[in-house]
Length: 297
Image (tube, rainbow, N blue to C red; front, side):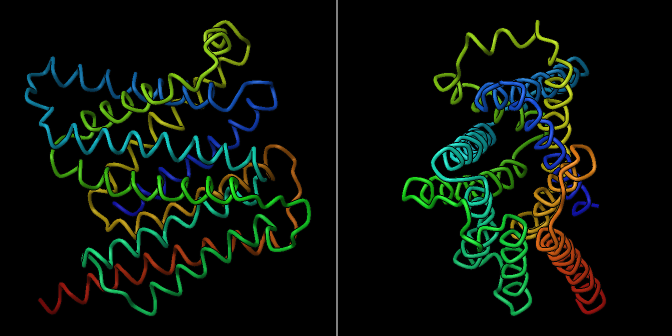
């Protein structure tokens, strides 16, 4: 169940990526879209937290939870901001390929901290996911791909921020409830985004005909997806969560094919298959390992 929750969260992120594409085509800036995504997440988690408080729950905000959740919120913000910067300085292909180096970073940190042991299988999964992303984006062809130092640096920082919020959310989960941790994380993200947003455009969103999409985007992109992801993250290793989240770009690609009428080339289709097979294989192997450990304590 924890792995399925992580996958469900990533699946919703992929769908929200398709909705974000529609909103950007309608003229909304990435920063404004990201702000409303985080605001809706904050409203959802704040409402849940208020309901818990009304029911008698107290003492939700220990300093460790606040500290780790704040770091997680900054990681979420960095992931999104650096991703968009990489796109503006290079291309979507470069940005998404570099952002999804996050599993490699998570594995390396896990090995350095000795929370996991390196295995041939885990190494193959890392390689397979990166190959899948490369096939999906077509970055290997070099056509219409602009590689600049700023684009590469921003893309890698996006991946590092992705890895940061995985570890931070994992640590926050040990010190408090899901709504408390996510409320702090989203609050930190809103504060970090504030100086980057065109507020004249942001305040026009509620009165626009696109606000229904904003609501759906916010609920799916933050309110429900982070709830699923954070809850599932409590029961899986960071590296498992990082690789399982690879269903996000695959979902976004399928969204484009099924709902936006975008065509999928043979290499892109192969990339989707490689990612899904790698994620499935990793999770099946880990379940088998847990069963063996249970039989031979």
